[in-house]
Each structure stands twice: as structure tokens, then as C-alpha cells.
Image (tube, rainbow, N blue to C red; front, side):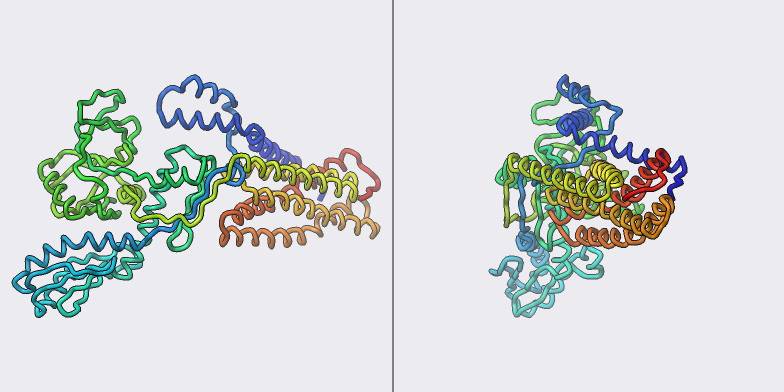
Length: 555
């Protein structure tokens, strides 16, 4: 067991050296963060760096790793919001938008149904009263003819409208399958819009995720207050469809009054000159879904409301063969060519899309404005001072835990305890290196996970050393006792670590927020401690034994 091949020793110490290398940037957090921000800004702007950016880039060697652990909200300070999406608003808006289309369809059958009028009803329900009760069956048939298939996997074969007759009144509302599909689309749109709005201010590692059926958790480190974050999220993204005047690669192209020069979202270095006044706006877009064209290529289906459809139909009839720009937040996300007139307010956008790109474009088209209101159920602001206090408290706890473990191991196991402490130091460094490599976010509960890992890391060495003591008491020589100690303690070490690792996995899977932060560092710490406690500690002991060649050992 102590005869470790030379290549394996090089591998063990090579991994330790890499861990130190990748963990070093966290010791110079501010400098490396400025270096990374400057590189990202230069990549986005596509021009030569400014003197300040160049100085920030040169403040950290280019050959050194520059990955950092992201500091969570409780360490960096920032804002926390829990918002509830008002899904019922979407149902009401959708039903209200159906009235013009239903009215026109029923008017075409006036001879059978008589005159029509919209009757009062609760939100999300459309009631249409006809003057000829005998024509109610025909009216229901016409209304059902305007229903569309549900655009979801679970709603396959079902229509989006429930239509029934009650005396001389047609009652129309969204079907259950359509409500479920609408909920999914609405939350997806809300998440996308919020993420785009937050990303615009350059915040680092925001947490924007769905919670439950209708809630969204938003945590943004580094932002001033919860009120500022609410104002940012409440800003409506502007989606417009504009006439394209010219396409260019010159960012300084002059434009005439009433025109704008906008950068392309998916074509770096390409700019479009567009008419400032849009043809139609995102408020008139009812829906957009990924689809396939007649050649089975990925595309996007879209649909406007009644007024938007008429305007867009007239525009496309007059501009066949010309491109039009889809503009979101002052950037052209797509500029398809009009192949034919698009009457009725429904059309298809084709291009060199992949399935993923068509899905993303559909989401962006729907993400022109928040699809539903947000009610903020919970809001908190964590100041930078409180975040620094958390860092200081976590650092103090880690140092105290480290000192306590070091003293205990040396007091109980002497020189062998010191070697276990060296392996423990490598373990902590390796945890920071892994967190930096995967871009994980370190939180205060995450620091608690690291502190717990320290105790678990030396626990494996305690099992090994106690087993060595037993072998020595049984009369084994030094080499045999060390070999037996590592071999016979291995199964107990693996069992203990696997059960703890499974607990960390379960906490990560079903937990959220602080629980997941704790689970991440605990899980990484367990995996790393298996390496350091068994391989690094054994390599240290083997090197020491080969150097000193003691006749007897004392543990």
C-alpha cells in the first residue's frame, strides 16, 4: 500500500498543484473581477479597449486562470424579490381580444342568428347575446370554428376554447388545456423578460427562477435596493416591427430624420437603418410559437390581434420581397424577407434557424412586454456592509474550525496528525478551485458546508489512524500496520461519505436558496475529501516513510 508508483505520485501532486493554481484568483478577487469585466466589455463593444479597460486587463496575467467563485446575495449584498404572476389577467386579456373576431364571424351569419351584442360577464369569460334564440346552435358552431388547437404537448388534440350555449347567449372561455399551456407560456415569458431587464444593468450571477405554479424568485447581488430592482423589472421591453431602409456594417452610417441605426442581435458587426415609426408594435402581437415551414425547416408562427393583423396585412402586400426588422430593446433580433402578403394577422418567419433558435425567437417575440402583472409578495435589501459582515463572520468561523481541527489532530496523532492537516489544507484549496471552475455561487450556508467538510475530511484520517493503532497493538510492523490501516478503513470511509453525499444530492434536488448553497459546497467537499484523505495523505505518509525508514512508528 505504501509502494506508490512514481507516475501516480506525479498525478496526485499535479492535481494538487492545479487546485492551487485555480484557487489563487480568489485571493485577488477585486483585481481579477475588474480584469474579467474589462475583457467582457471589450468583447461586447467590438472595439479597442479604453485606457482604463487596458489597465484593468493588464492588472492580471493573461496566462493565469481568471475564474472566480461568485459571491451570493448574502455575501455581496443586493436585493431579493418573490413575485406572483397574475395569470388571471392573461385569461381576461385573451378573451377580450376574441370579441372583434367573434363579432365579425357572427355578423356574417346575421340571417340565422339575428343581431348580436356583448353581454356583461366576469373577467375571463365572453358572453355574446343573439336576438334569435333559434339560431343558438348555429352561433355555437361558428364560434367553435374559430377555436385553434392547443399549442402544447399535453394539450394535443384539444382546442383552446370552450364554447357552449345558454338560452340566447353564447358563453366562451379558455379550455382547461389552454389555461395550462397559457400558464406555462406566461411564466416562461415573464422569466425571459425579467432576465433580459436584469442583464442590461450588468449584474453578476442573478438568480431568476420559477417557484411553484405562479411565482418567480429574483435575487440580484450588487444592486442598490429592492425598490430599484422592482423599478427595473417593471420597465416594459419595447418590441416593434419596423421598415428596413438599409443594411450596413458601418456603425457610423448617417441616417436621415425619422430613421434609426440599430445593431443586429445575432449578426455581430451588422447594423440596420430602419424607419423610427414602427409598422406594428408588440402590444398588438397575440402569440408566437416555434414551428416548421413547408420544407420542414425550423420557423416561427406569429399572430396579431385584429387591428394589428389588418395593418400588417396591408403592409406586407405592399412590400413583397423586402425585409422588415423585428426590434426588441433597440436591437434587431431578426430581419426576415416578406415572401408574400400576410392577411389575417397570422404569418411565419423563416430563415436559417436551428430548432433552438426558433424556440428562442418565439420566446423573444412574446417577451415584448410583461404578459401579466406581478404582485411582490416578499422583498428584502441586503446592504454591502451586511454582506461584508457575513464574509467576516464566515471567515472567522472557518479559521476557528481550522485551528480547532489542526490542534486536535496534532494532539491526538502527533506527526501523522500534521500530515492529515496538510491534506486538509489541500482539501479546502481544492474546494475553492472546483467552485471557481464551475462558476458556482458561494453563500453563507455554503461557507457552513465548507466548515462541516473540514471535520469530515479529517474524520477519514481518524478512521485510518485508529486502525493503524489497532494493528500496532496486534504486533504488526510499521509497514504492515500502515498498509492494513489504509486498506481496512477504506470501506468505512466510502460508506460514510456516500451516505452524506446522497444527503447533499437530495438537499440540492428538493431544496432552494440557502439549502442548495449548503448542499453544493458539502457535495463538492465530500468528493474532494475522498481524494485528499486517501490519496494525498497516503502519498505524504509514503514519502515520509521512504525518507526516514523508521523501525517503529507511534500514532
